[in-house]
Image (tube, rainbow, N blue to C red; front, side, top):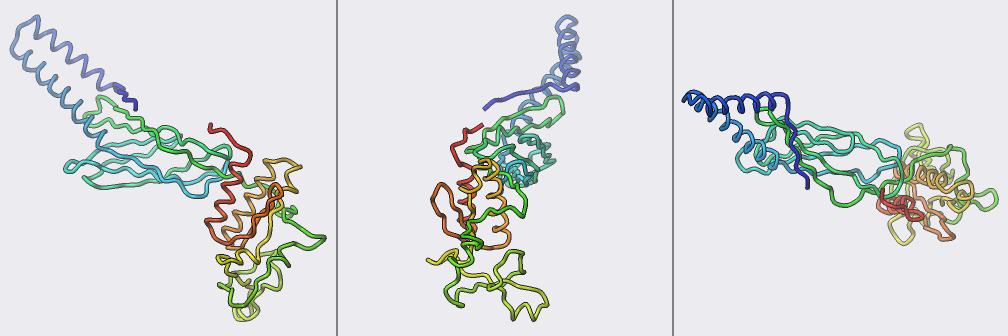
Length: 300
């Protein structure tokens, strides 16, 4: 961990005044000069001790969202805690990447958080970089810095790309595999309904609720049991790879992200291996993680 100090303009003036006063006291022998030099030196030492204690009393933690896509902004939560038992901490600046957050005062034992907008340029594992904490407290003579390295890399999913009319799902002839192969077994599997989304099979429309609300609604089925994903579609990653791996991964990422919003089950065909359609958020994030780490990517 590095420790740095930057002397501010007021600090330069103060140091010059202290040196001049010390020289006057040494060569002039005037008691007033000795007293003034002692007071200036005392304030100088007090500034150093108070500033160091203020800065090292601050603890910083970062909280990343579970969905981060390449080239897409996301909100990073920066939390600063006061680790002191009795004294507040003041004028804390936190820098992460290109974001800067300012915390004027934090009381003993208190935690405060702010959000900053960041983005990563590519998929894969990324180190968030150093977290820089600084403060000009108490007299604005010096700005003291601490650099803290955050533990562990951040996983960034492929960027979302592609047109909505592209054929990205496994098909048999003109039929989507999901239309027949992954149909629900029984009405007892129904979890609820949601508004109709273009592309939903007509046989899954809940006609009673549609008639009651005046708009089409689609039935949702339980995908958490051994019949997980019976009503889902399967992304044909193998069929898209010949047109470019990164584009294929971006299109697949877009479709999984859409399924996260809609709650629909979704699966994927990758390298001849079939991932059956799943409905749970954890399973879909696991699929996105597989896309992010597709064909080993080095940590930048």
